[in-house]
Image (cartoon, rainbow, N blue to C red; front, side, top):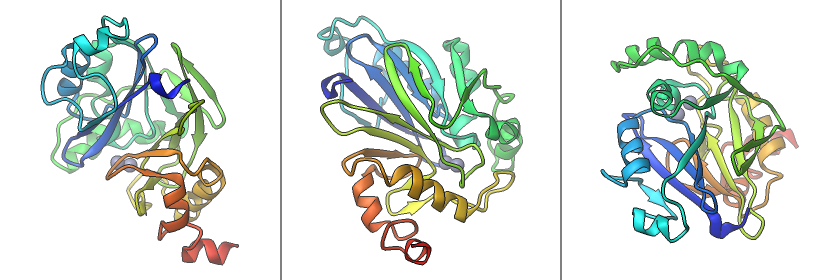
Amino acid sequence: MNSENVWVESFVVGALAMRCSIVTDLTTGDTIIIDGGAETDRIISWIENFSGPGPDWSNGPTSHEELALHNIAARNIVALVNTHAHFDHSGEIPYLLEKYPVSWYLHKDDFYLQSLVQASAMRWGFELPEPAVADKLLTDGLELTLGSLQFKIMHTPGHTLGGCCILLEVEDGPDQLFAGDTLFAGSVGRTDLPNSGGDFDVLFNSVVTKLWPLDADTVVYPGHGPMTTIGVERTTNPFVGINSVAFRSAN
Ligand SMILES: [Zn+2]
Ligand SMILES: [Zn+2]
């Protein structure tokens, strides 16, 4: 895919300020939604009508007129994909599936966690619908074709058992990595959350073996907090970077 056709939008949603990413191919209008966890009314209004507050970050059209310049009348949602199954990331998938009856992809090692999202959210005082059940599996190394979009899936357990990072390879520009809660700018996801199978050593190994080999200019869209790049985190991340205590004691 060429960089001029890669349209990415970030919606920071819900009480836990989770990043939902919308990825569209501007040559076809084919679109996926990554981590549709909250504020799905807001997301749907924007996708359908460009109405409401819209994304917190975008590199593409902000009106039907701008979209029409690409000969696209409307976006075509081809799939929903999740990095993992914490309720802030997956709690409102049922609302998205009502509007867009497409396949929903999740790693099977997060199926148990997914079955608990309604109960987990209740402990935080949030109401959610009956948990969605994924009908398609993410697996490590999977080359995932969704409409005209192509992604590479990396299983990166550690924050949860089934956590995955989703890579969009760009021919003439930086690749785009949707990292969920595996890697943050200057931090990593928690490894102490209930029912999640979190383990720092596993997370460290996932990041070092799967993410550090990526190109330095790869843009990282974390599940929480600001965007970053692989190069910056590889050098400076205090928990898993090559100058961290964990890295130095492992190498
Ligand atoms: Zn999480
Ligand atoms: Zn999260």
